[in-house]
Structure formats: structure tokens, C-alpha cells
Image (cartoon, rainbow, N blue to C red; front, top):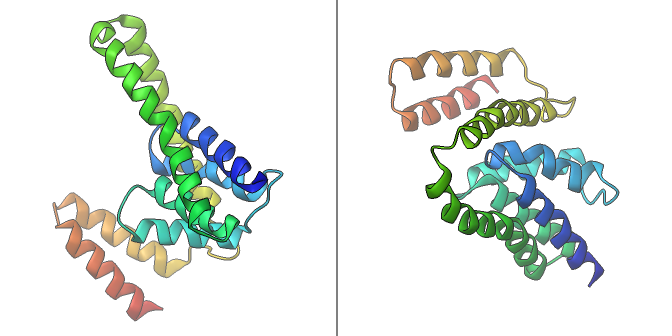
Length: 175
């Protein structure tokens, strides 16, 4: 029972402070499940969770919560608790926020608050990317080549599905 409570509290905090979407939540998830007093998973396990969460349909934060809840509790009930906990704060905030946003959307202070959140969100996403670069999965020359080729092709309005398929093929050939 204590494990479920800790899962709920950890993922409730992640849902409450996870501005900017799933990738911005990754440092929060990492802190709660790898670095925090819980230390439920290793960094290698966390990296695997991120990879699996990206491959499965749905938001990365929810997929991560489901996977961590399942791994920590050893069953579906932990997955349900963690998933519910990460979804609850944004749901409540959006219900409350939507009532007031329409009334205050042209307010100068509200506009300035949103402008202040943008760089913080970019910083959290960059922190998530940097935290995934470690000795276990360091980016090598082949990965940089795939990244640059995909980045350049995206400027020429290449179909994203084709880019994903070609990147996978390049990974098969290069690795």
C-alpha cells in the first residue's frame, strides 16, 4: 500500500509541475524515479522507458508513468495508480483554467506569464535530451550523421513518415 501511495504522490507532482508536455516532464520523471530517495529504477532502465514510451502510441509522460507504475509495483494496479496520478493535475488545472482564460486572455500579465514559460519549457526539453546522453547510450558519429541528414531533409518538407523509415533503415545499415 505504501508503494502505491508513493507512486501516486510522485506522479501527481510530475503532473502538477510538468509544464510543456512530455519531453519537458522527463527531467521530473527522472528525478522522481532514478535520482530521488525512491531510486526505483537505474538510469539504464529510465533510458529504456523513454525509448519504449516514444515507440508506443500516446503521450510520453503517460506512457512513462504507466511503465514505471507497472515496474515498481509489479502489476497493473501500480500502472493505473501512476497513470491516474500524472493525468489528474492537468485535468483539474485545465478545467479551472479554461473558465478564467476566456475572461483574462487579453490581460497583459497573463500574456507576460506565458512568455516567461516558453524559455523554461525549452530549457526542460534540452535538459531531458542532455540527461539521456550518458556512457550507456552516448551519441556517436553515425547518430550525428542521421540527425543532420534528417534535420536538413525536414527543411525540404520531406514526409515525416519517410524520414522515420529512412532513419530506421540508416540505423540498421550503420549499426
